[in-house]
Structures are given as structure tokens and as C-alpha cells.
Image 1 (tube, each protein chain N blue to C red):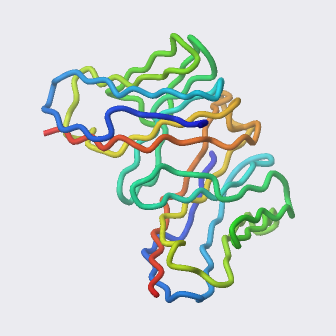
Image 2 (cartoon, rainbow over the protein chains, first blue to last red):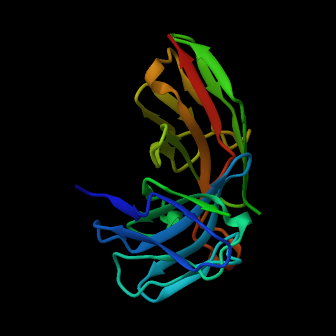
Length: 115
Length: 116
């Protein structure tokens, strides 16, 4: 089944404790992206990747890191999480970038709480 | 820059009611327009899209027409069902972006609840 998977689905952590949220897609997509969803703000892009070893900042990259060592994986790293990073996070992928009008496929989301 | 403004709700309707969710956009050039839907506890999924002016996207009884003259992409459904309860997001992508940024720009989303 074609899908985007994220792990963990739920995470409660404390300020300053490094964490990684994994994202994997099995559709051989070139483009992958991370969004955060907050009430009243909709979805905002954190980082995106056009292909292996090619990443770039989205609208709200501060406090996050990403890497794209393999085509299928695009982990989101929070080196020192803070309470303002409490949010619902979505990973997405598409065959190529959204400017080529492709549908983006979303993972199920990771609900992160930073105490 | 690129932006999307949509009705935010929340909106509650009775089954079989008519639904309109307004969406307007600001963009240079010729963006593509999308409606995504998020069912409870799930990720977003594409509902429909339109890639040029006057295109009509349709799916699951929902329709939206790309109106360049009014920069709008309103979502409509003639008779909603309980299973349509979800959050609806209008979004655009645009090849004419500064710095070549590759991203979807989303509206804030509108929560729809349909009661039996």
C-alpha cells in the first residue's frame, strides 16, 4: 500500500531533550516536506526537500533540523525542544515539487507535547 | 507574496444541507488551487484541484471552480452527509515564487460538523 508513515504518533517530552520524528514514504517520491498544524494558524511549512541531500527552509524552520540521506526517509529533529513546539506535525511527499501541480500525500500526524 | 484566505468556522449543518466554503487567494502568475480534507484523527488528503482558470475540480459530490477574475476557489456540495464532517483546507501552489520556494500555501482550515 502506498503510504507515508510517521513515528511516533504521540510523544510527550520535556524541554531540552533531543528528539527525532521519523517519516518514510514508499512511493519513490522526490519531494518531501514537514508541516506543523496549530489552532487558528492552519498548516505552516517547516522544511522541505526536493531530493536526496537537497533541503531548504520553509516558513517556520527555527528550532528544527532535517536530513535527507535516502530518498524514502526525511526525519525531523528537534535538538532542544521548547514548549512553543508543542504541535501536530505532518510529513508529506509528492512525485515532485508542488509547483508542478502534483498532489501531496500526507502522513497520519505526530502529536508532540513539550513540557 | 502568496496567500490564501478562507472561511474558518466552525460550521454546523444538518444532513442534506447545502455547503459553501469560501476561499480567495493572492498570487502572482497562475497558481494551482487545491482543496484538502482532514477527517478526525487523520492526515490531510486531496479532495480536488484545478490548475488553470475556469477549471472545475470535482470529487465525492464536491465541486470548486477556479475563478481568476475574482481570485476565488469556493468549495460547494449540494447535500452534505454526516461522513463529510471534517476540516477543509484551501491551498495554492505557485511556480512564480521568489527564490523558487516549493511549497503549498494553506488557508487556516474550516471545521465542518454535519448532524443527522
